[in-house]
Structures are given as structure tokens and as C-alpha cells.
Length: 258
Ligand SMILES: [Fe+2]
Ligand SMILES: [Fe+2]
Image (cartoon, rainbow, N blue to C red; front, side, top):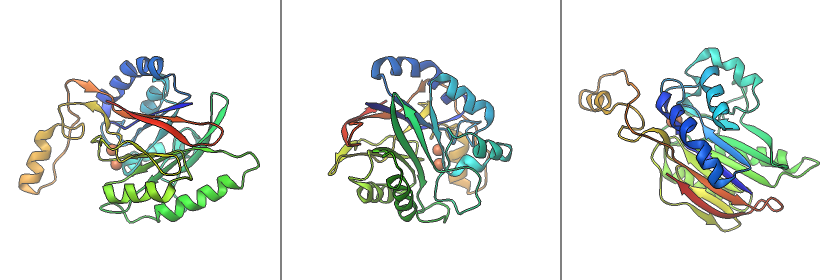
């Protein structure tokens, strides 16, 4: 079975790119499950009900997120009530929403786990210990769920790669998000775990992480806060596909979408 995973969707251009390009990707890859990181879907920062629904309408089945998911407070109740939307599991207890879901994908159950790194990011609970506990919960189920996908939303390549090795042989794929820059290291780790440090983004190609570079340049030069705006221009969709043996959960092959 194939799983298609798209990197951070940035603003209206990102949503438009997913709506325009995902149908052809679905025809090409025939995925059992389509997952996308939606943390930047609304105006470049956060997610709301409308943007999430647009992405579901475009063919996304599960939305993961990250540090920006908390930007729009009106969305918090939806995090509690919509099981297809995840936020990083290692936020401390009491945070709205959930960090893991089990989804039906073409007759196979797939567990999706959303985690966030702590290096150069908010100091939340340990992603390594959190995922260990979640895998214990999956292992304790009456019906096993061998197909397991992890979105590690993190800044530091070292932390993402360390987590991938920590999970090697225990999950099907560890796929990175958050930097919006696709890395060229898609591979299968020993034990049959696909790993990619970052899936990239869905948004405007000629941009700084999907945003207009001018305000970002000014902030770097002046050190002053500056309002960022979503870029406009040619749009792209970036991500990764993973082929998984549904019986064992082992990744068989992995490749980039860009
Ligand atoms: Fe992002
Ligand atoms: Fe992020």
C-alpha cells in the first residue's frame, strides 16, 4: 500500500496548489491514505475550519500540524472534535486535540502520530518518550496496527534523524515537517522504516518558506518585528510517498514528490 504525505501547506496558494495538483498525484500514486501538514494553511499561520475543509475536499484524509496550530483560538474546539486533525502529541496534558489517530485506509488501519521537536522550538514534553508511550498503546490493542506513520515537526535535522533511528523497526515511516525545505535524504532505515528529514511545503516556489521574502529580509537586517505576508507566484506541491507492506508495516520503498 502507498501513503502520500505532503509538507506544510502555506496559505491560499498552498491550498490552491493542493486542490489543483493532488487529484493528478492521486491518479498517479493511487495512495491508500493522503496526509498533509496543515499548520500554515490559514493565511500562512494556523489552521481554521474553512481551510481544513478545503484540504479535505481536495483529497487530504488526515491533517497533521505543528507549532503554528495554536494561532487561531476559534479552531481549538475543532481540534477536540475532528479526529482527522492532529496536533503534536507531546504538548503537555490539557492542550486541546490529540496527537495520534488510527484511520481506515483501503481496508487497512493506519496509525498517524504527530510529534514536535524541542531544539530551537518550544520546550514541550519529550517527543522520544511520548512516542514510546503511544507505541505501547498501539501494541496493547486487540487488533494490531502495524502500519504507522510519524510526522516529526522540528527545526533541527539532528533531532529528526535521531528520532527516525529511535523508531527504526517500530514504525513504517518518520517524515519531517516545519522547515518548509525539502531534503534529499529519503531512505529506508534498518528495520524497514522510511525516513525523510523534511517533506518541504505546498505553496509559492519563489518565496521564503512560502512567505514574501521582503519582510523577512527586513527583519533579518533590522532585528525589528515585521508582519509577514504570503507570497504569490508559481505554486508547487512537495511531499513524499511511502510503500508499506500492510501485513508487517515495513516500508518497502520511498520517493519524493516535488
Ligand atoms: Fe510550517
Ligand atoms: Fe512549524
